[in-house]
Image (cartoon, rainbow, N blue to C red):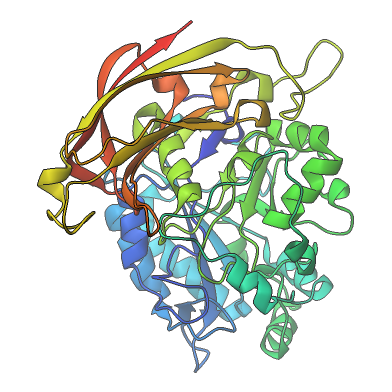
Length: 486
């Protein structure tokens, strides 16, 4: 992996320290450790002064979340950063600190990571380093303190309606993922370009902090930043303007991404060829739900930040996507997202493209539920009635779901059904697999899921393992399937 970081999708977490919802759950290093154990490479920490203003806590600001000490999170990152992957770990800091506490953070970071911490000699980079050059290293990404202050003074706190809060709740296994061609839902009108993220919030404490920052940012802190971040200021299109001799990271909220990809899709793709684009969930997702990651991926966004502590179909896509490349947390972007066409055109995922290949799938049978579930888990009085759903998530033209018939009263169902999926952009396609148990009187029960990058599929008959709602592999449950490309 010798290309610049901007050429890769990177497994990215959002508010990585939260154990549950965004408003009242505990902050802890435990979810950070779990995320690193799954291969997540970008850890986000919101850092605030403690109550006595002499130390640094990690918490979701202006909520009832209980804090955790920054030093504890940093030590856990160092201990577990490379437990499953040697690819670089990026710590994104949302900084709400005084100049004095920035100095303290710089000292903490230096002492904790020592020689595995990487930072550039110059303040700005003309090109990002490669993952290979950063093997086994930790790097920081945040706004330089002066830019952070300016963005905070420009933006106010967004509003979250009760209707939005309830609309984000997921069903038993997560609501179906919105099609890429769909526009924003009416309920999203309260999510303006001003996000609901602490990065853009402002209150009296921050104004007091600004008085300290105005004396000048802490140089010890500023020089540690490898990936310099910025917030969209003014028009979204202006935020994506490229600088000739400097690369940077820009963060957009989920609604901002939907808006800018609808109006300026080519500008987004061109920006992500050299720079890094980070997407984060809208503030109304207080239940820590997630969004459709493919909108970001198909436009080249490298850091599609997700709440990793929950479950649902969106998170299953995220987990499946990063099973590619050995699960190292970095996946190379397709060449068509990294270069322009003969007329300087760039890839547009919403345009119709010719079919490149067709994936043919045969679902033979499934087994293992009897070993992993209680005999009465699915049905109190009879064996389960399983059916399988298979489909594609990718560009809008490729999105589809199909299902087998339900096999009644059988712990080892045999379906022997075939499906064909024409693919216009197989490079960005994910194979979705779900098993459910048909229930005539209630909601169908969940029997397992998997999500696999189509590019990683190998032709032939395969035993495909299934995972539970949270992405943990079931011990015994597998489907016997056949894959063929024509």
